[in-house]
Length: 85
Image 1 (spheres, helix red, strand yellow):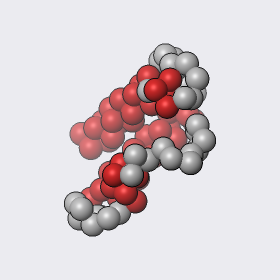
Image 2 (image 1 turned 90 degrees about the vertical axis):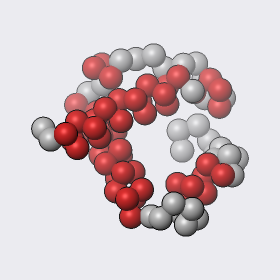
Image 3 (image 1 turned 30 degrees about the horizontal axis):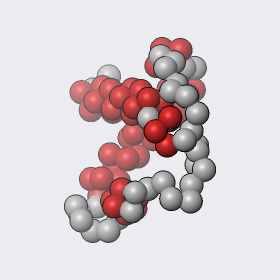
Image 4 (image 1 turned 120 degrees about the horizontal axis):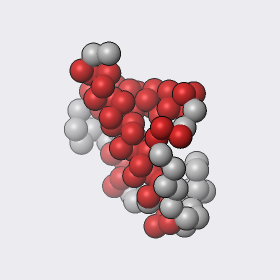
């Protein structure tokens, strides 16, 4: 495993933990406090793949270019969305 691979996996673990912890703040039920190690390898792989894609997108978009990642945050990112979508 390279340093880059480890960084992506660590980011995915943090994202998973924060995603579960913030669920109640966005009306998505109670906090999900399940551990990363409790996920199936397929679920962990999905989070790591998503993190890898997010890093690739961030590398390819200039900051402030109006890309999708920035647009979601600037508009609040939750209007009109269902939990889990």
